[in-house]
Image (cartoon, rainbow, N blue to C red; front, side, top):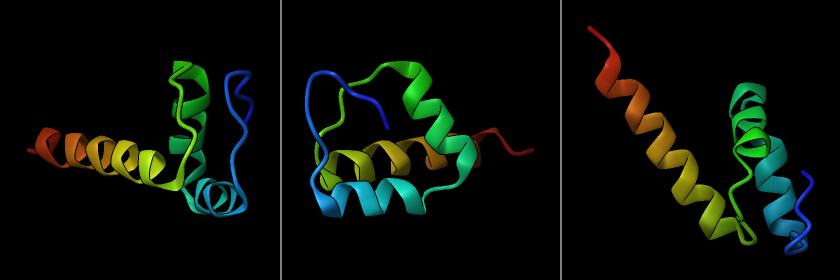
Length: 56
């Protein structure tokens, strides 16, 4: 994951790499600044909850 504003620690990198490719792409393309595993987890949780609410 490229992020000029901060470097990911090993835990955050491992978590990012464990996410589905589509979610990884969404994070990278959004340009959002996520520097920690906790920030990535919160983003992923919100993104996945958003998908759940869109189901018929």
